[in-house]
Image (cartoon, rainbow, N blue to C red):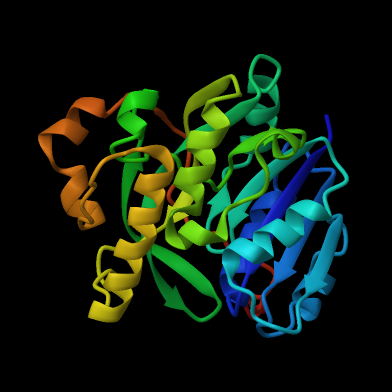
Length: 273
């Protein structure tokens, strides 16, 4: 089983360094790591810090946005399993090992997560707050609100031959769309282990009226594509507290120690003699 990790990045060197650090700490190494830099600051210096990792860096000259960039990454995969990850998330040490085991009986595996808000100090993010993100897998309920986090999820590369690539027409909701399409042809399994550290802050989630209008347009396209009805746009954290979402909560295994992940971008402490 050859796992290819596909990462899209744009001007997040500190966050990407922590993700690479978490991959270097894995009990099972990936076959390759494809990083698509969407015309941001060069990642070459960062790649040089992790020379032991099988990184293939793709530096785009034009900013094509994250969905197109992710499709470029997928097209360059040479492994038979694709694992996705956002550049500001990371994994606990046994994540790849555990996903690999689950894939023996499934075509598509996704893990639970911990939602973490961070504070940046120097070249390290320090956790301020954390909460589990773990919900029962129910395809009908997933049509109302997706609890699929693409970071850390893995599936057979051949899936794209069946359902195509990620759809840029739904932009913000590319992952929801992809999951709904995949679930129609895959054996999907939720892994009840919070082995993905998902960076998401409750502050700063308010968007401008223009951006909200665009989100509504993309959501309408998603709803029309999958006959989901007229779904409203709601604040993520407010929605998680609604009774319907509370009923969907599931038990999960917490494995992260809550400590900051120091990458190789961090200057070593001065040795005091």
